[in-house]
Image (cartoon, rainbow, N blue to C red; front, side):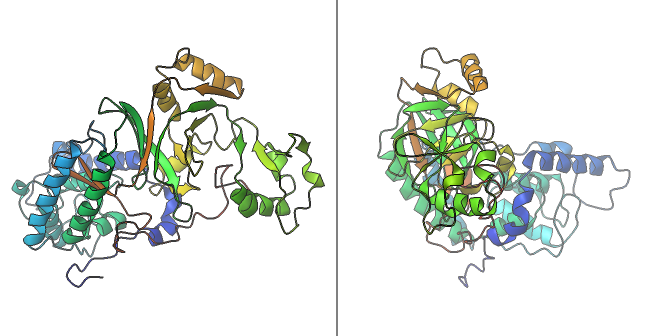
Amino acid sequence: MSKKSGIVDLSRRAILRGAAAAGAAAIAGQAVAQTAVDELISAPRRGNWDDQFDAQASRATASVVSNTPMLSGSNLFNFQDAIQNYQAIVSNGGWPQVTPAVKLKIGVVDPSVQQLRQRLMISGDLDRGAGMSNSFDTYVDGAVKRFQARHGLPEDGVLGEFSLKALNVSADTRLMQLNVNLQRLQEMMSKQLENRYIVVNIPAAYVEAVEGDRVALRNTAIVGRDTRPSPLVDSKVSDIILNPYWTAPRSIVEKDIVPLMRKDPTYLSRNNIRLIDGKGNEVSPESIDWFAPKAPNLMFRQDPGKINAMSSTKINFPSPEAVYMHDTPTQGLFNKLMRFESSGCVRVQNVRDLIVWVLKNTPGWNRQEIERVIASRVNTPIKVTDEVGVHWVYLTAWSAKDGVVQFRDDIYGKDGNAQLALQTNIGVEQVSGSVEDDILPQ
């Protein structure tokens, strides 16, 4: 840790061992936070706070979302402006560490709120006209929500442990992060992007569908954990498979399925997974010695259906690592704050919206026909007739809107600063849930 920065370690993963299952219920958090605001404003006695409490100030959190894609060339200008701004902040001594003795949220009066106000003013999240006081009012609440939105955190206005750690990353560390990611973006901009393309930002764990340099769709995603990372990809969609079969990779057969069969010989049949030999014949699980030193040299193929690892949809594209994008039967995973749980493939929330967009220029495949085929449970490959690019990128900092800089954790430790990297154990290596490309049922 740099003596100059005095940074509290950003790593969230040690904390997430206890919090991962709880998820990041951002929408619910916003609703609860707004209820708290309304109660404070309507209370007959609010104490002797010297700051106004304005419901609109809390509701009108400045949007950090833009219709400009992450990979738009216009972002290079935003990036350079952000770097100049952060250089000025660093030259002026950075921002203060926020060290509250109590949890800071709407209605709290504490001397550390002045530290928080100063910190948020310097980063541009709180208007300097909000003034300095010890009161956590609705203006501070709105500024905290804006900060949380820029860092991929639940926008609940509460300065919890995750928000505090992100807040206390020093300005010089953030400046370093911006410079590293500007180089990444410049390299990406040297490539010719398609008019229509899908981009997965791995650290942000979300997907953009882009058309004509505008974002048409955004989808939450689940990407590879650090021990099985998602690779960088530049490719094009080849086909969509509705009701796909799932073929278990050899690594999953050895690490996951064989140990499960040793515990429960009914595992394969319960999960509609068939064993297929090299001639295409089905092999009975009972004929296999599951305690042999090596896993059987057979294909482990799961039938289409609700419990299939890819559920309704698979999006195929050529890649050296043979990765793909897909649906999932365990939709609850999308509510998690840390969505780094796959074996490298990318699961997409509301994936049917995405495939409707991908197939819009492929004759005969409107939403109604797609839904009809999915309901039939019949395996159906569809060749995509127009060019749709696929780009999996690694950006932990970007600016798609003037004056708004987004930051994410360096989940694979590529930024060169340990204070931005996550710890190695998130506590999701256990086998649970339903069949996935990496997480199998007990």
